[in-house]
Length: 77
View 1 (cartoon, rainbow, N blue to C red):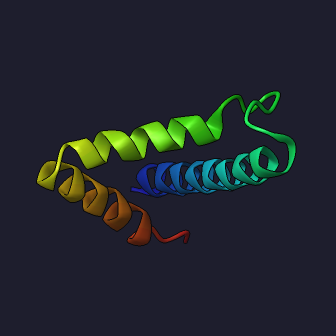
View 2 (view 1 turned 180 degrees about the vertical axis):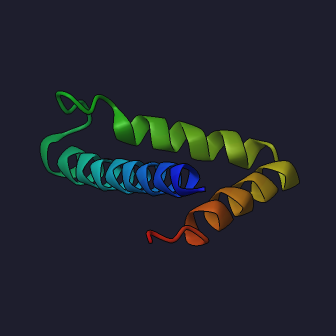
View 3 (view 1 turned 135 degrees about the vertical axis):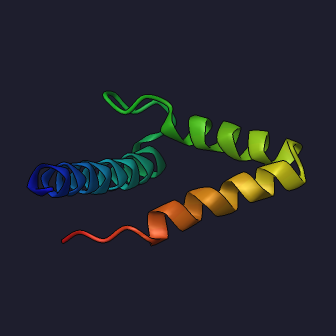
């Protein structure tokens, strides 16, 4: 069981780092422009993702709710 707890801790930490990098990429894209070196076109990808969810109506709304629920229920312990 200790191995499973360690794996959960690593996955949580990597997810946290990913979210921080995403926030950094968005800020850099707003300050520098659309095509930021290393981060690419992050804002265009986010807009595309939102359009994709929006075009799917209720299914997209349910998917968005599920994604938000997964991120809000995480605990780093």
